[in-house]
Image 1 (cartoon, one colour):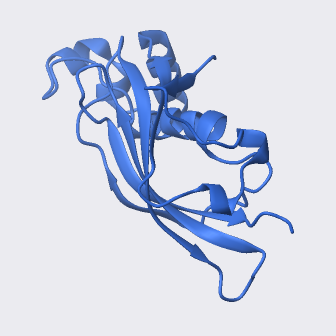
Image 2 (cartoon, one colour):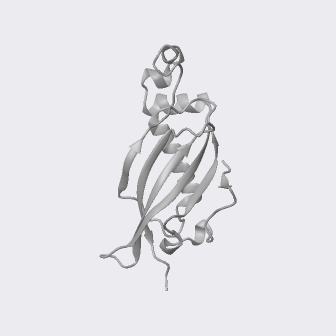
Length: 163
């Protein structure tokens, strides 16, 4: 799975050398692309979210979406893959306490091509642990029609650059 920075804009620091201080409020980055196949959607849904709108093409054709749609959790997994591949530091990321404002705005469909847009909305050093900080990121998975199969605001703990 080869993804890349889009639009010629990326962090100045490589993902293997990126620290809390490299995440700057207002910065916007886009990464892509991932192609979503029907086989992949069905496999995910059969294993993790076997609702008829996700696993039964005949049922889904007569449903409210007019066809098969991917699980929202599949959309979350695609977004996470792009975050892990391109956005989250390999040396400083300490995980996340959670996400807020999770929304599924449009269905993920077979044949979609998606990209990730991240916007850094807040950074703050930890008051209790001076070796780290928190980065708040608005995250959007965007399809080829500029629809958003998933959006959320993520908080991530990142180590500060060693002195």
